[in-house]
Image 1 (tube, rainbow over the protein chains, first blue to last red):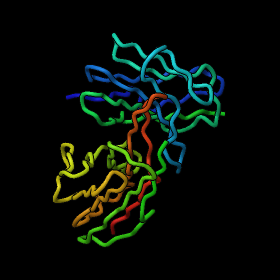
Image 2 (image 1 turned 45 degrees about the vertical axis):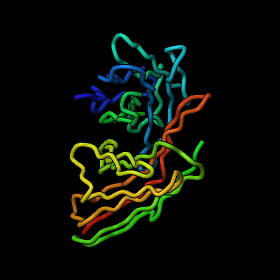
Image 3 (image 1 turned 180 degrees about the vertical axis):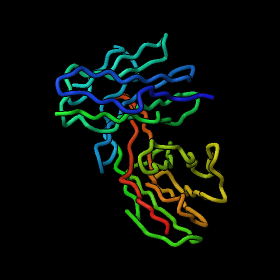
Image 4 (image 1 turned 90 degrees about the vertical axis):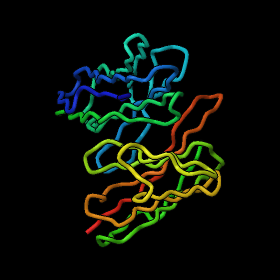
Length: 113
Length: 116
């Protein structure tokens, strides 16, 4: 079945550590890709998105993601995390063949001060 | 961009009853969706609300349980029918816009439903 996979269910890091969260999808054709963050008790917030052009996209709060088409991946990165980055992170894919948005299961990030 | 409002923002309901959630968008949009986010989980697509025709439901969701209306390009309703405690969740209305500046999905504030 077509899907969006986030491999890490829960990641625990110390402050200043580097972060990489994996996201793979199985849809063919043209896709738009997104990362959302959800802080405890809050709504979804868009971190960054890719729809065309440079496969390395930069988002808010120092996050970036790289689209690797051959690997069907869109991994999220941040060189140095902060305690305030503690949140749930969701990868989402909009496949033009389906015309709807699909979310990964989410990765909970805990940053220890 | 699109601004989405939902009513009610939250409700506590008794088992066996039904609740209708309204979604209003400040502009005409083609693609409108309903999602569910259960506690501690990701967003699950319930259905695509189609203007002028029946909604398209995802696997595991049926029209009898989650009837959807979409009378025009700015409004939709989702009804959660014959509720059980397992239906306790946040229900989100969402739209997807295609634009020269990029495509983006916007979410409503959500309706937090608790079923006793």
